[in-house]
Length: 237
Ligand SMILES: [Mg+2]
Image 1 (tube, rainbow, N blue to C red):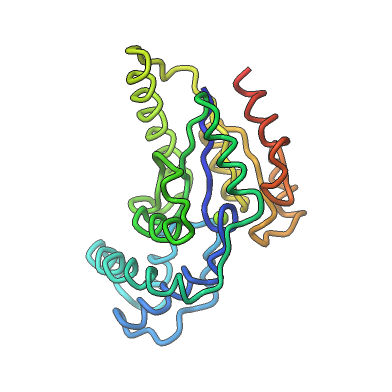
Image 2 (cartoon, rainbow, N blue to C red):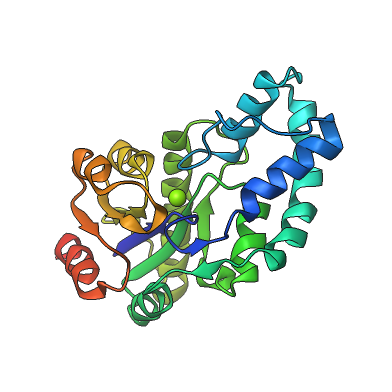
């Protein structure tokens, strides 16, 4: 059994700035911040880490109460701005998901810094949400390696339940994991859970930066499906 965990932004989709815009709009309406600092990096990070750094940068108390207020306002704003931005599903994504779905030996999940409701909003907009049975999300975690551990735990539960439903037996032991993402943080968090790391260049991270992280496979985009399937099949052999 193989588990494939996908990052969202820059890997499955480009939202053309919808996430950043929803962050900026929410900080303006909720905390009165006219322009969020451009020094705060978004790519590869959890929503919670981004929000907490923005709060600290702009003198807003980084409390759990403010985090919950942020989430409540951010998700509906994200749903509003997604259709206004000219985003896209990245090359090869739909075909790769179709191919993986054909295999009963592959479980498909998410490993993302997005909060779960944000992931659902983005992927629902691009009609991809129902492709993913489980995931690790950025709701509770600042560090992406913690999200990776949560995604791994969710995948084990899912695999055990689906095997149980099919055969009456559970066998969560022999699970192999592949993480596909577009930033050094994705490669790093793959390593943190002992997963195979597939890096893809569709998120705008320079090639030499991703090469330096030494992924198991580096792709221009996810249309290189056979190369990905070789990685998946080699770890399930
Ligand atoms: Mg990404």
